[in-house]
Amino acid sequence: MEEFFLGRALEYARARNPEASEGRIFAFAHAVAALVNGFSLGLAGGPTVREYVAVRMYGQEGFLAFETAMELLVSADGPMFGPLTDLHRQVWSEEYCFGDDPDDVRELSGKNLPDEK
Figure 1 (cartoon, rainbow, N blue to C red):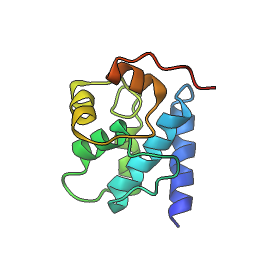
Figure 2: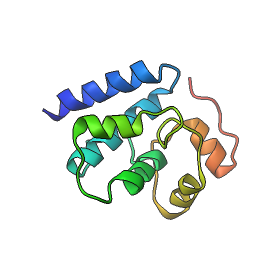
Figure 3: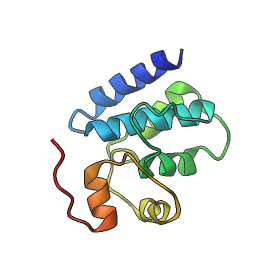
């Protein structure tokens, strides 16, 4: 069942944000899972800084319906696909994040990392 919902979340994110990196697409699906059932299935690393931010922003009131979680997170200017914010920087300094999009790592760490192919 989880695979079905994660597959739907991946397809939805790709359709709504076709220019987004695969790292952000998978982080979106993980964050949706976390908001719906309280944990991410970890398909491709993480939790990323964007996943942590999504849960801090929307997961404080309990679990969300699947469609609601997807709508909250899919915005091109939201925590998953939008620019990094002060909250992203705060979370980056407080949590152990991994599997992050290389562009996010560059911006958050101030390091010039090699491009991933």
